[in-house]
Amino acid sequence: MLNWLNNQFSIFSFLDNNQFVFSYHQHECLIGAGCIARLEAEAGNAFEQLKIFSEQHKDWLFGHLGYDLKNETEQLTSSQISFIEFPDLFFFVPEIVIELKDDVIRIGSFKNDHEEIFHSILKGGFATEKHFGRPVKIESKISKEEYEKTINELKRHILRGDCYEINFCQEFFAKDVDLDPVQTYQKLAEISPAPFAAFYKLEKKYLFSASPERFLQKTGDILLSQPIKGTSARNIYDTQEDDINKKKLYHSQKDRTENVMIVDLVRNDLSKVCIEGSVKVDELYGIYTFPQVHQMISTIIGKPEPGKNWIDIIKATFPMGSMTGAPKKKVLELIEQYERTRRGLFSGAIGYVTPERNFDFNVVIRSIFFDEAKKNLSYQVGSGITYYSDASLEYEECLLKAEGIKKVLALDQYF
Image 1 (cartoon, rainbow, N blue to C red):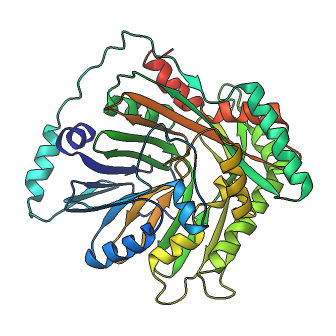
Image 2 (cartoon, helix red, strand yellow):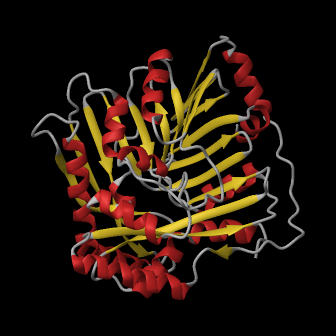
């Protein structure tokens, strides 16, 4: 299917839960491919354009929300340069929608050529084998020393009362990269399977995502957000130590402090669009295990006000608190001041909207970005900073979060 998608379509979104037993999943795998209509917009009046587009096309929508839409939601600006230039907002009405669940495949098509599509998928197609003959050097936009210095400067902002917590990110990049998109995504999925994974193609630009985090889901009259704050390393070779690491994470005062701050921020965001008194914490400090890390995840639910437009719900809660900090507007200003690169699609969201205007969006983290035309590759990682953060440990946490990506690139002989 992946080969068929990449060979046949210049635009598609492949969303996969990798068969994780994870609460509130509606689909095992959902695909939107081809493009009947599209909307590409930059921050300014992008959400208003999306409202018009959504009214014109009362069908399935797939697409993404870039982090820099914060310039519209909070009236800010961005001065940094983006290495992989995805538009701030992109949505499309797909020609074909495919759903996989258990042992069933459902195919929707405007042409009613479902059997033809099914047999075409079975025939597939083959990705071109790439031979990585030339070395590719991964570089960082910030040195370890600069990173630690910046963390300590941010802690001074926290001490002064400018903010309580701030998510600080750094970018790693490479130029003159030659890779096979299908093989790269497959390797990422094998090494780091995740419940909100995505293989996303927008003409010559690709996103390969192993995201473990949901931004926001709407199902009927229920809104649900599942922010991640709190990370510990796995030890797959020693189950006893691995279990100890899980327990340490659960009882970690630092991680609980980070997590509950973001839970409060999400509750506040949801209260803007939900019925009064309906916003509740469904799970606090849940510990979930992934191939490289254990994560602390909380679940917040609420009931949207009757008739509330789905775009207004997104706008009120974007960008997600787990990738910003609190209070949101101030930390967005500090992120712009201290980070060395523009986030772009990183820490944005990718997902889908149903004809009934239910939706589900992830948080774009643990992801590789690739511009096939310019042969540029990038990935970003970050962590939540509080006054009690140790700069060197935060740097190590960033490297830990990128472990799956580094393994994928190492397998492709980039180092």
